[in-house]
Image 1: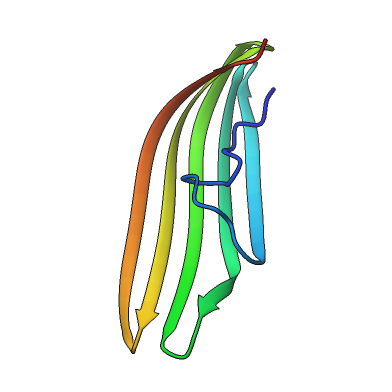
Image 2 (image 1 turned 120 degrees about the horizontal axis):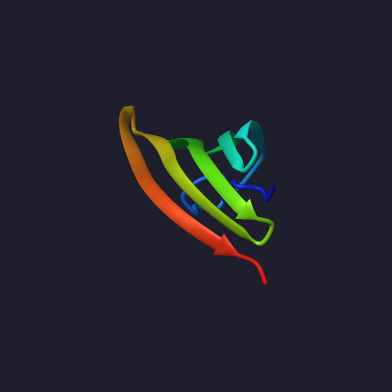
Length: 104
């Protein structure tokens, strides 16, 4: 069965710096696969007054009735916390997606 994870592990945000990626896949029945992934960016972007911490995760369920066709319903989240001059702000981006991929 094809890899159901998005290439960047989330919402298409580029991964910059050192990171840890964990993923798990569980086959529920013949053509149905549950997947979950987590990307934690270790090297925070920082300067004297500015620090950014980033975390991405996703879960999904895939169905592949044929070797060349896969459909995935997934939930992706990108969480970024910014500490600027002692104040902190969170930026969340969430996306629910239904993707169908065919390889010929």
